[in-house]
Picture 1 (cartoon, rainbow, N blue to C red):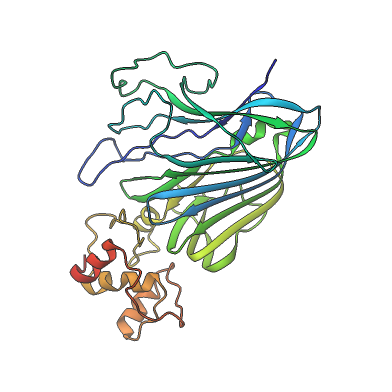
Picture 2 (cartoon, rainbow, N blue to C red):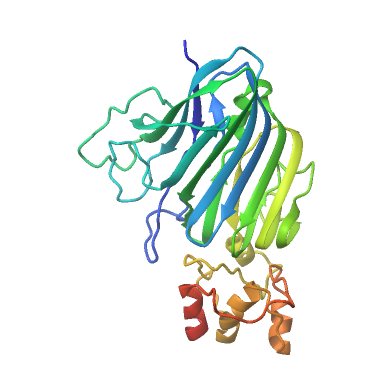
Length: 358
């Protein structure tokens, strides 16, 4: 009897466009997840390196490297990557089983690419075909999922798996971006832990300012391993303790041994945190992407400040005393004397800031 192993990327994607109010606070996420089994007593996770890359194109790229150890006999298992239907969009069910917001899906096991087939399934049940409506658009709260299914041969001993994909990330009122990733299901493997776990978050050709709860990361500190960056622990109001990170073309990394995934992570833009934190009476969040918003909306940024935000984001050292004093109060600001003022990589949104100051 084959054992079913499920790799679940539960995705609730919703796109609350400017001026719309599709739900209370516009929080609609894409959740990354682990390779997970229903019941697995033979295979343990010796090593996992999870890299999540944040860019300005609206996508998050996930690269996961696993080293599994099969303590039993060699066997073939059914594996799957499951994603919930998009939420709060106009997308209709695709009977081919291909998710509209997942791109570049690949799995390589022990050096060999694995082929896969798609299906529409009941959520959480890769082996159960979907029995809902096929011709009409599903009702708003009717659940179904898209599955990417493949067979994997686990040899005795060490097995290496490399998995990559991109997905369109979420956003909402007061949040320019939000990238949840589910770690808890990894506890279903033999031993309920990951022997050697590394989390890397990258800002690729851009700068990102984000927060995440530090409940999983108290044993060791995050460190900046590439590019320019800074890290601190923060807390405000009812929030849990947070790891706050500012990165410019860089990588922040956390590494731990015998890691028990007792919680999930949520990489969230720091705009809401800054807006409601008394420590930021003059500060503002900034992001290069087209989704960047000023939050709260009633906060008015002086035109001169707005025009200089893109330069500050790149590390420009201001000569004007008033601007130098102002931006020095922005925690994410990281001066770079080697940066020469240039607009070569400005985004359309930044050109509008430069021309209109808003």
